[in-house]
Image 1 (cartoon, rainbow over the protein chains, first blue to last red):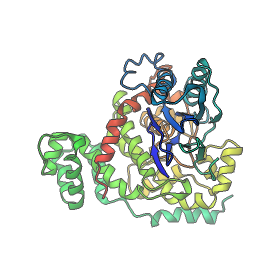
Image 2: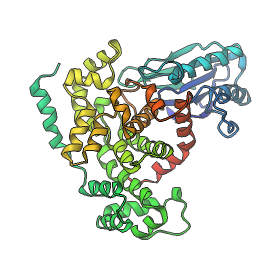
Image 3: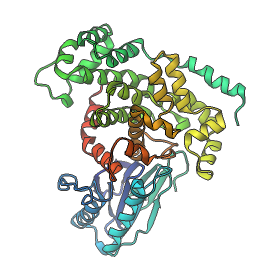
Length: 160
Length: 288
């Protein structure tokens, strides 16, 4: 099976049933995947930080997938443009790990996850699969053939 | 738990580590000496044919975007500046030592070096921002901070389950778990290696304490910068393995370096905006 790596602050879609999309080594970043079983097509996006508006980030047009608040709407819009049916989507959220002692503002991973959940809820999406938090480093694979999700935690096996 | 005998075996293993090429320490000395002449570094590099060839290949790559072909080290130093040339050379020199896979840490080939290199590049950026005094030393210490993992790898591999249990069930930091199980952690071991390789005491100290085990160390600006660059790289999942995010984060470091309430977000954003530049530099390094 061909594996295509998705970089942070980026997105990829596929309808190649021989392909898997992979988000490697997720620390505090969060990967959101969407899969349409009817069309056997899916997409994967990784963002790094929760809130562009809060950071007065003015280059969101150039970097729409850096922050959750711009990344998630862009991702859902791009998914629709790619032909994924909004009503048929299964969505997964993976990552958002945190270091010991990261609370409040410094808990970037936790804030990333919270922001992702809020933005998805706003458009009526509840993730069907979540693997988030903790002090793990995760690698996520989305199989385009069947929408299967595999999460490998560094130092642990097998995939879960 | 460790025995004195196994701890001795680990420390003895420092001698089995292939020493870093002598030119590395000479270049580090030049980098730290404000009175060094550009020509001194150029002459040293020129004496090493392989290093010179790699350097010229890198500086002539698309990443540096120079209009004409550079044909000598002297020319490269004049055009790109001594700091850039030293960074490139040190990245190349350490690559040969840090590239191998480290199964104990669940790091594939190239990952330990990638973490070292990206965190060093970030540390230079952070150091420039706070106008630190010893920017070249900060770069070098960051590059070599995990050198202890090369020795400890096989022991972490053998005791992986026990270390993992302390980390996952008892909320130990990874280096505390290493010390509990093996009697020494990779940072302390790195400090000892630095001493064995005759690095300056300041460099050995930064490498030894790069996980900031004590709040009293917050006074050391260099150490705070090395620590923050390591944290950002780990959070971004760059060359992180089994130890992942299992280290302690200190908000006080952000205050110490005068970052505001959004400090950590700013640092990550800074990395994000540099990412394509960093990827370009990494791709341009001819690692042979």
